[in-house]
Image 1 (cartoon, rainbow, N blue to C red):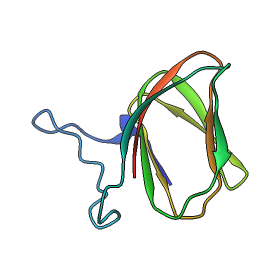
Image 2: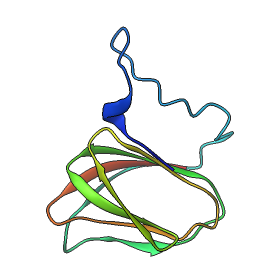
Image 3: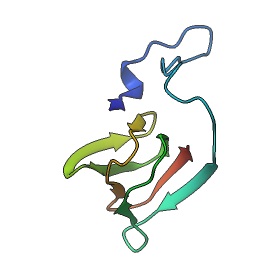
Image 4: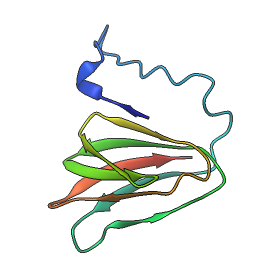
Length: 97
């Protein structure tokens, strides 16, 4: 699932991505910078993950499908979904899982 950040109305300086109930515990919070020489290679893991794109544009691969993402987008990855991220320039993003 991809939530496009530019489609969410900001109210009182707040954007609500409506993810309540999807994640009951946090195992990690990591800020990544991905470049063409440093792609986030496809892999799987047991837990849920959320990726928030901070800067740049990239392509997220999820179970063999490609999705264009940009700053402000939120990516939800279900357990055991093969996923990765690649970019032609540089993309900063947060992984919360």
